[in-house]
Image (cartoon, rainbow, N blue to C red; front, side, top):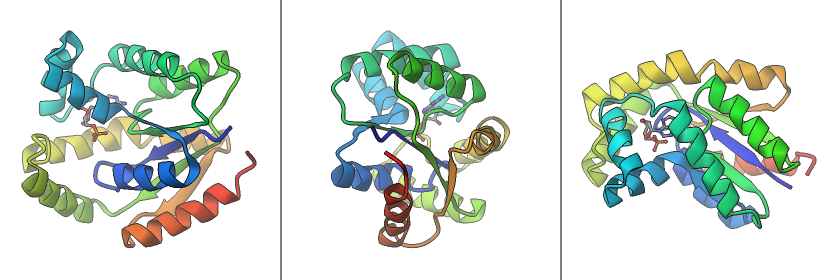
Length: 191
Ligand code: AMP
């Protein structure tokens, strides 16, 4: 079973690349950001709680995210494999993911880490904000999200490097170039 974590700072193209990976490999897409945005739209209790954190550029608390993820896994037990997009973002989330997958006798196959220089990321996100109107794609919030990424999420690269799962992918080419690189790496994996 192929289970991929797509890892990278905000704006590295995780969502775009996930769509392409799903099409080619038939995986089930789990984007915690997309799920949270839907909850906000529905004005559910989870959405209302999450919105406060998202609009400030902060992470939604681990307990909420981990429960939400367990629920998604329970509802999609027949998936051929999963792609985790925007999750995990903290060490406790990474440990919880190992545990949740372990209980199902599956594991992460690889963590694909997309790297793009921060300056370029900020430009990409500002552009996305203008085009899509996504509320957290404005400068003050973007700067906070980058800080949160550096402090809480980037250390995960070391966590996955130590367990041999980390695969680095340069993320500054075109969508097609980055995807080609991803395909080369996925096709090399033992699954
Ligand atoms: P994304 O669409 O992945 O950029 O996520 C948008 C926002 O949702 C983030 O800035 C966080 O506030 C929140 N979020 C998404 N995924 C997570 C996660 N795994 N842990 C905590 N917060 C998250």
